Length: 292
View (tube, rainbow, N blue to C red):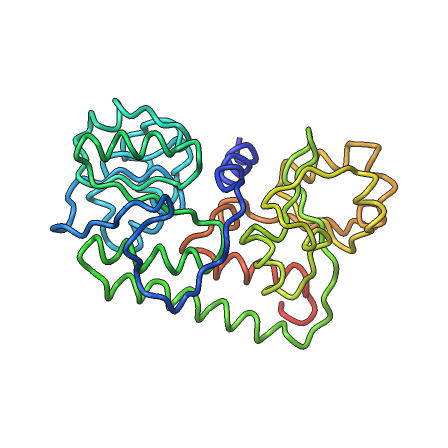
């Protein structure tokens, strides 16, 4: 179940976006080009993106959440918030039913209609595409401003950024082993340059064998993975079991030599406040002798 949840979170961000400049202030328009409207601090918030739900708790506003998606299960307190279904093509009637004064959406083209409907209904709506680490910094500052606490939004972003810089500095002089990140089996899905997970590999001191692919989550073939011959395979607990049982993977040196690195998908599965922790955990797996 955890593996399926991880895949759902990744596919929520399946559209490539351009990384933002983390030094920029909050813009006047969101990622749909709609105006960002700063009103009095919202009291009833619906967050339909696991990354922003996580962030809202970090910003000290978790008690204002009145709606979330199926996948928003971190922190633990998020489970007590009403489940409004999917974050993609959400049920607008259900969202309006909890009387929100702010709705935060993932800026997928599938959510464009929902954003328009919510704005037409008079609900302040913010649509953000959080696919890269810089997007998280941007979101933290923007949502902090909407919550009436710009200072805390900056503090959360800066704290994560400091951790990531520390991890990068620690791994900078180390060898950069090649990595294949196994996400799903049918079809075989990995991560490309369009994903924050590619950035995590680089910060942790590795090199993604599909870092030359612009997509967020490209479908690939086992034959091509074998040709690229990664030193390590990163996957979740369920993925590890599937790889070891699938005879097609037996030709991969990383599988034969048991160089399969199992990550905690609850930590690495969203570009939010645990990004620093995610990078640290991957760095320790890639460089066990140097960092453990």
